[in-house]
Image (tube, rainbow, N blue to C red; front, side):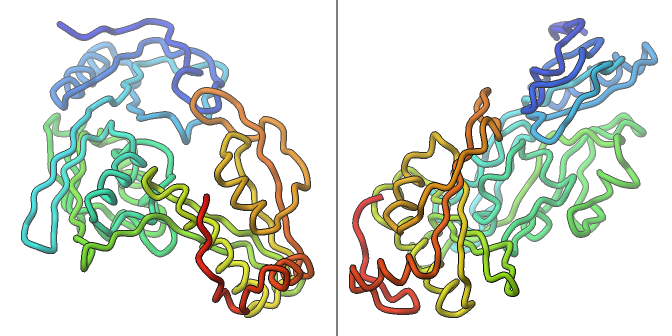
Length: 321
């Protein structure tokens, strides 16, 4: 392939967050849709299996490797087109980091995908599994997919209605698995009203009403939202709901060891460090400990009394983390 650098014996560990796997016989980076077509045709002309991936965040490779051509999608691009004062189309290259797309849209005051923050991987992978979280899924905002069709050997546009979306699935994952190499997606999202924009989320999950315990998770997506006390306050509100309304005895939280701000927020809300899951998660090319924190009902109520907090989360704003 003229102008394309095909590498031999590519370590698959470079293309998985697990950092495991054998080698791919061949590998190539693609930066444009015509390169996807060229790479696929090169492999097919040599009767090689071909696979296109993004960041490899959801892949566990076999030790015996991959005997064909591995195409690494690095197609970038982000373009907004305002339809009116409310609706905005966003065209995104399939190789873009998904979480950065969510953050970029939220920073512009656009809503519709903010709950999908922190989902690892690239934008092109989101329609395959119809990713979702906290009541949102990509099928709700996706207008269409641009892809290379290996059957017709053409670049095609597939509209939302033809994607075969279901709960965490699509035609790209089932009936047409391996047929389409996604090169771009288009989203339709909305501007938030009155200039307000979501800055993050807090959730209580894994609720066990019989044993009276659950987990809490708080996340802020923008650096401009940090150190304002919002994470502390959101966690307090969630705790108050968990214990005043759900009548829970224990709430647990897990946090990466590098996330100092989240650790401080938990401590300020009375959480106690219980233990460490050593090197339990991978992030940014290395392994990190996960710290386990918890708070009991009696501890929360004691702190509430000391600091004069009202019940049901009606607590005063608290500056800081």
